[in-house]
Image 1 (cartoon, helix red, strand yellow):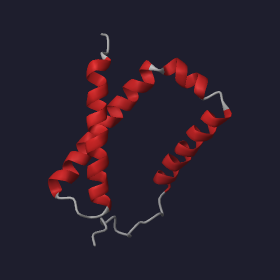
Image 2: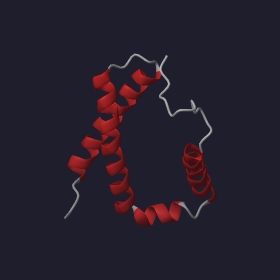
Image 3: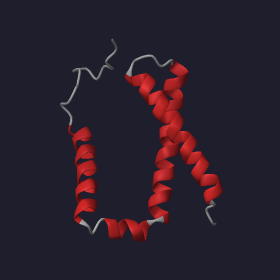
Amino acid sequence: MAFDRKWITPIMAGSILVSGLTGALMFFDIANDFQEEIHEWLGMVLMSGAVLHILLNWQGLKKQLQTPRGKWIFGTFAALLLLSFAGGFGELGDGEEYDD
């Protein structure tokens, strides 16, 4: 199955735009429930697109990871991901969600 950029690019651009805007609304605590739901589902679209992008560009990614800059950037994001699973950062004790 060939992946057509005429479809992939606008889908990804739209999901990035809407996810970014709804994320900003959530950051400033002015998003409604529907916007939060859209944000979460578009996160799944973005992850699918990211995986597809990595698969389609695997050889170029491998070349980038051989450079110092590529290693530094990848390492930074890998460290952030690991920290997000480490626990102890911003926990409320009972696993309750923080709500102003």
